[in-house]
Every structure is written in C-alpha cells, then in structure tokens.
Image (cartoon, rainbow, N blue to C red; front, side):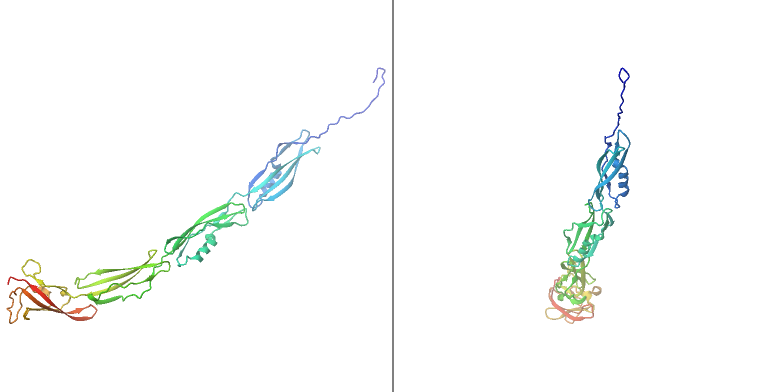
Length: 382
C-alpha cells in the first residue's frame, strides 16, 4: 500500500518439511544364544520384536520399525548365523537402517547316556583280539547324545596292550564323543586280559602210590607242562613223612608243581612208601659208659619175627635170639648158651660174625626174606 492508498496483494506459502532421517540412539545389538536343539525360536522372535534392542528417535514425529532377513548361514550342527536389517521410519517416510546378527552357538559337550564299561576276559593265548576289537569298536558299550547335533563322532586313544604277566595284559582307553561343533566329552575304561587258568601236565604222570625198597628209590622224573597263556615251569620237591620206624620205614610225598607266568599252579603228588634194610652198628663195648654197650641194629623193631645169630671165629654159635630189641632183648657181649660156650658168660674181646634174618615187608603185602651178615668187633674185659 502506497501513501495515496493504492495497494496490491500477493499470496505466499510458509512450508515446514521433514527431510531428516530418524536417529538410532541405541543401535540394534548382535545376539548370541546357546543352541537348544529346536532353533531357539522364542529367543529369536523376542529379539526381532525388540528390534534387536535398537531405539530410534525423530525430531519431527513418531518412528515405526520393520525388519528384513538379509542372510542366514548354517555354522555347524544345528547352529546358525542370521543377519537382519532393522529399519526405523518416521511419519514422513524418512528412514534409517542398521544390521545386526542373531547367532546360535554350541559350546556344550555331548552327554554320556551309557558310560563305557571295564571288561575282563580270560586269556585265550592269542591276545583276545576278537574280544578287544568288539570292545573298542563299541566304545566300551558307551552311548552319547548331543542336543545340537544329529549324531556324535567317536574316537579313542588305544595304542596297544601292556603285558602284566605271561599272555595277560591290560589297556586303559579313553573314549571321546565329539559333536558337530567340535565339543567333546571323554570317559576312561579298562580292558583286562587275566590268566586264572592253571597249566596242565603233558607228561605221563607217575603212579600215584608206590611201595619200594629204599635202594630202589630214584630221582624224581622230569615232567613237562603247558599253559594256554604263556610258558610253564615244573619244580619237584620231596617231603619226608616220618614214622615210628624212623629211617627204616617212612614215606616220601613227592610233589611236582607246574607254575605259569601269572603264578597259577597245578600240582601232582606221588606217595612213596619206603622200606629200608636195618643199619648195623658193628662195634660193641659193654663197659657201661652208655656208648655201644650193646649191638645196635637200627630199625630192627620194624621187622618183628626177626632172628639174630652171632658166631665166634671158629663158627661156634655164641648168641641167638628172636625179636631182637624187643623188651631189652639185645646182645651185650654175653653168650646165651651153647655146649661149647658157658651160658651168660662174658665173651672175650674179638671179632664175631653176625647173621640177621627178617622179612623185608614193604607195607603193601609184599614180603621179601632178607639175610644180612657181617662182622662185629666186641671189646670186653676178657
């Protein structure tokens, strides 16, 4: 309008526009969860619904959120990594985007359902290969499962058996179950080969019980034995079983023992009944000193019904008796009656000849008449 009141008019528009994108005050965050074997659906949906934890603001209005899956990659087993683009849009269509990842990981080892078992087998002499392989190939009977793998892989550290004795041996083995993501669990079990079987004699065994004369006693036979799980050695020993007859009649228990490398034993015992000739102490000095005061015939008591005759150097019978040593019936240097010798008289010092007769009874009904003869020296005061 001018000073004279003339005027002209025009219309103009003042426009407020919004060309500014929203701003993430908190960006969407990557999420990492442990595999539950079912895709972790609840956790994934909650993460999406929460915009990955992202928060956006706009200086000119409200913000709405959307998302889109950019990529999904399988990692191992049932694990995966999903990349999601989250978009914040204002009321004027301005928007901003940010990517984040939802990752399912597996850090949990497989669980043993059945533990591997220790196994003990009897030695077969060939390393029990079939038993050992069956045990190892079945992982000691163990089973395992993993939530995030369709199957587990098995391995072991078996490198061989360690000998304990002979063919017996043992191995401590670690069995390992590994899932698709490389997590593993291990258990230890032991495979043992034991030898509890005694060796066996392969030689013909001697007669179980024999009755022999002492002079017929021989050295023990050499017996051989075998063992299904190693070698066997045979030793022999004699045990003397004394009797009332002392060295004249007694028993020997002869025992052979076969022993394998693991200490298992098999034994065989032979009973030897021995009958020996009497032992003559042929010096008689009846002086009362307690030594050789009478003719000692060691073991004569074990042969009842014996007969003893003593002759002088001219062949004259100066002493005779039966059941010598019975009730003090012994020769003490005195004659006991003949025509040429006075009865109960002390015989003179000199050499005499004895004859001893008895039945050599082995103890099993076998009887051999025996006659032992020799010289004795008599020392008297005459």
